[in-house]
Image (cartoon, rainbow, N blue to C red):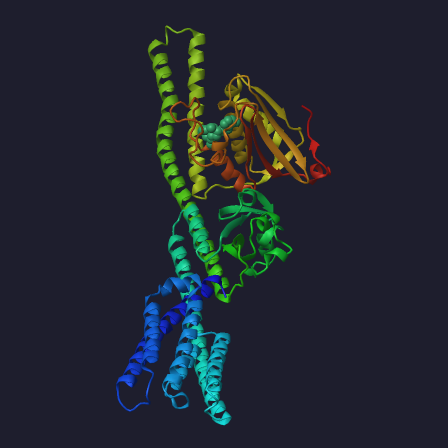
Length: 605
Ligand code: ADP
């Protein structure tokens, strides 16, 4: 039985005793009135008037005093029963005094003993009942004895047994009554407790529908606390499940909740190995008990697993400082809370993901709008240059010297090439999107292809130091046109997005039948915040307003798509102030070159 139940059972017994005191007072009033009527009405034995009225006077004063006492307070302080016993002793004594005044062996007052005996049986614990009934019998026997035994022993025994039988019957009835009262009380407190459990679970259910993880955790922990746990801890396991830490806790020592724990420690450790609800009545002797929690006074505990998307993600642990036997209802309520926590965490996570997606879509939308203005700008810049130089040549052909004319024509060609490249990228991209990009895999000699690209992009690398670390005989399986686009994009990016004087290294290494081709630079690097977007279509790093470089934001996206067609992918590594490295793998074309067991540098720098 839980402490609160004991308390309410005690309370209802005290209420019952208060009622018996009231009944006792009224019965005494009626009996005194009847005794007065007996005296007033004719037909009784001669009575010693003074003594009779004195006894009745004392009885009346006693009843008035008893009625005036603050019974509720007396019962609460535990002194109520002592007063009741004193009142009973007084009653028995007064009846014993009345009997010789009203005809001794023939006195009808003997029957008043029956009234007090039944009263004891109804109101007192067994020991007091037996004691007071014995006191009554003793009073009567001594009274009869003192008056020369006017009643024979047979009749005396009969009268005493009559009282004992009354006491026994009354006691039986009152025992049954009290048993029923206790059962009723237990049922009432059990249903109240269940209502409280359900209330707590329902409250938590309402709260945990919130999409904010923090509120959800708090609601679950508060609801668990309202189930009568002084300490509640919702712990979350690490992704690999080897450790856990408190996500939300109340009433737990900070020394424990602040730290990360191994998944072998405490109740959360037990749940990790056996993910089902577990209650421990005697925590002190549990092998997994945590000393800090024992020092905090916890004696019983219960823990439930929290599942998120079918994975054991967390555990809900409750602890009490009082040793407690957990009922199946307690375990069920705890399990319901843990279930609610799991569902809510799942909802919160889904919401978070959806929110991120929406944010991302909005960003993409923005990127697309930026793209249109970027592309228009990218097309217009070389066009304006071509237009300007063309006009100059047309109008001032004769006045320009040969060298200047050649320079202008050269610049016009460079701009035309830039235009060509942008339009080429756009066309490639639209072909890729439409799934119309043909891939013709063949053995491609890497070195000549790289050299060709570098020579075509010569103008890009005027102020950069480009190193090619690829052996002449390295041959990979790829589409030569598409591979050229990849290398061209990576190299031009390394030149475009780094300052003059930057060193760019294009290298290739082989390992187990594959070549890893990388382009790295010792430029400014890419901030971590941008790194995850690199390679997404339309994404251009830096600030749109102050960006020093030109481009469409499609270069790396195109690279990724092309690599995907080769069943490869782009790896990006970058460190601020140290530079970036873009790499991908392609299968070697000739098995012979794949022979070396370990990584082999294909050319020395
Ligand atoms: P674009 O070059 O047209 O901007 P890309 O898709 O080729 O588009 O590149 C996307 C972004 O990645 C660039 O805008 C730039 O911010 C970043 N980036 C690419 N390569 C490098 C590099 N080598 N160093 C620093 N930043 C780079």
